Length: 188
Image 1 (cartoon, rainbow, N blue to C red):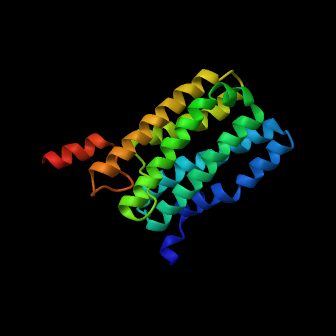
Image 2 (cartoon, rainbow, N blue to C red; image 1 turned 135 degrees about the horizontal axis):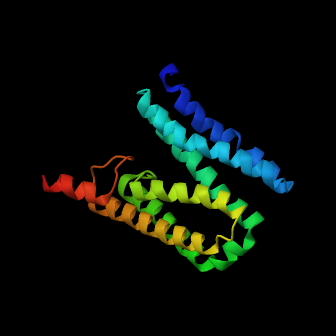
């Protein structure tokens, strides 16, 4: 058990633990404090995976913690965007419904086929996570309604890729880079 307690896992856990701090700042309309905390908490998302690979501390628990922390952090970001910048959400309302439908469909398909929910960290979805992180920061300074549209469309494409992987392939890992990587492996 002690091999699962490491710096990368602690960073993932910290993202979950400090999330209520963001809600506190948001609900008390402390936008600058929120922004600074959001930046620091979001950095843990990049650091946990980087350090896990660098320190050779990749664990099953770490992958689960990272996924759970990601889901809480990025869906909270949707709330924060709505709370601080409702025009972004209202401008993209229909696209958000499509995104949620495709997101849930990916989970349902993984549960039906593999008997458990699976989230793949494809390059496309990792890139989208960075965009979501950035939109929260950029929204403090600029109107990001169209940027949100691009992110939502990109996420829909990313989750469609994940659905294709679930349907067409049985042998993949959570760190599969893309459907093209699996197609190349299959041809070999």
